[in-house]
Length: 338
Image (cartoon, rainbow, N blue to C red; front, side):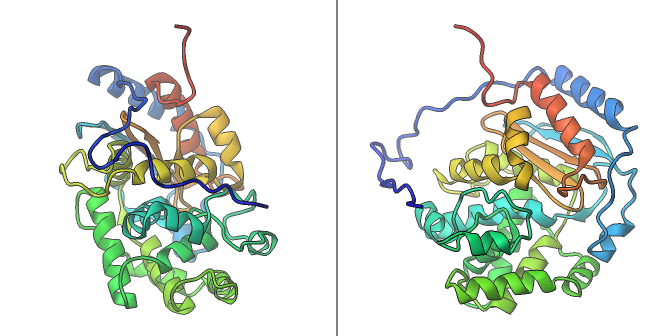
């Protein structure tokens, strides 16, 4: 299949002349808190789904844990439930690492080297690599994510890991640390990811030592976060790359929109089409039960609930996100007659 090629040069300079954007405003603070509370009360009694157990330590999470956080473009937060509970970021890290790689090497080079198209296969599929003639994936499935991690700034494994932890900490607005327990548990069970890395290397689609790249990726997934952290991270993507809580510039202009495009098309794996059809906002899920959602110009929404569906997405998280997307006016495709 021929890949569509577009000149990266635009008729304006994104660094000096911002393009026109399509954004709106959230409801009032009182309305947001009321809606967040309503969503929590509506779905806290839903006990469907199963806590992930293919990584042993994840099976220890209580299925009753449930938290919701919304962070607006000026840094104000609206939260309820287990918002202080810490859990490993897992695959929710993927779009943020992709963002730092786009920032480092350029978003067009990242597209060429990593791919951005949805695979339609599960997150850890090897078949998807084999069926793609260019052997690229997208940064939100495991193969593409490991390739993305291999492109992180740094000449050594330690330097790459340091750059990832530092930048994700900037997204969160605080220093993130790795859970040694999660890292040890994942390292003992990540043979499939090791195989994916070596397969990518054989096709010239990995850009660092495969075993070291897999190890860095495992560390990245083992970072401890809260649902508040994830909402701030999502709000930073919604805010053009500037953290709305700290005011720190995390990304250069032009990167956020590319990251959000991939999140919209591939953030929920093989159910990404259903997600976009029903919810209409870029999102990313993780196997520990976190989901982040980004409404450009409006803010970030994050949920945490460990029980998952068959595709590895938090069930309560999906229900809450759909509810709040409709009531907070987040759906990118919603409009009214002029």
